[in-house]
Length: 236
Image 1 (cartoon, helix red, strand yellow):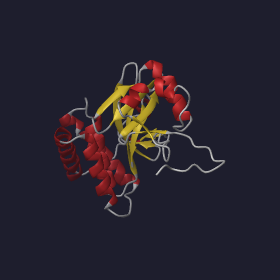
Image 2 (cartoon, one colour):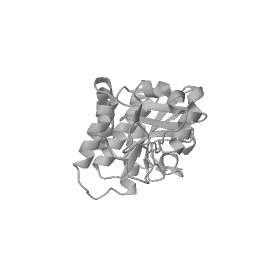
Image 3 (cartoon, one colour):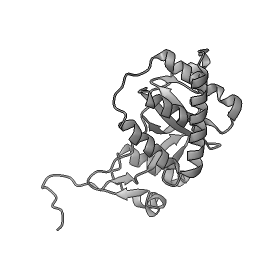
Image 4 (cartoon, helix red, strand yellow):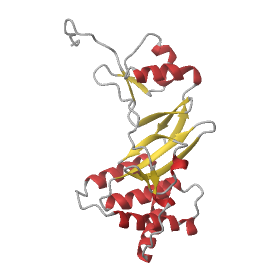
């Protein structure tokens, strides 16, 4: 049965992003993260202005949209949905004002270092065996099942930050940002800390980065470093 349109009420066709697809504006480019396929891609320059116009209209279709955004539509990234649509909000994260690593000299126990090392190795193994989307989904499920325990204090958070920072002496720092951030995020969330895992991107040249924040405090990086990246995915 055809859907009736109420008299006097405008009926607008809207687009929405396919589930698992995230986007952000990085420089002059629109970058997408296809989480199920674990890949990034940039929108072709001729389509960039049209997509930004679509975002400004919260997904509401406009004249010429179908032609200008045909690459996204044909790939199934943009889906027509007259009922909902409009899932174009950028990930919300507090603007970082400080970084705990830049001033943190907190001592930590040997067992904390060993736990941090274990979690980083375990996370590295998981990333080899499972797609990132599956790992993030499992983190979300376990986080929801933990309940609302008492959050650890700043001193305890600083100890874990120091412990994870020292794992670099064994595992190195190159290409470890996602692994280390996932491991730290899992530990902190397991202790009730309202931390956020942030994945950001930049263009010209393209690169991706990951870090952990607690409110407006960066835990495992510097403010100057993360300011080079536009958040594309935030997990809380």
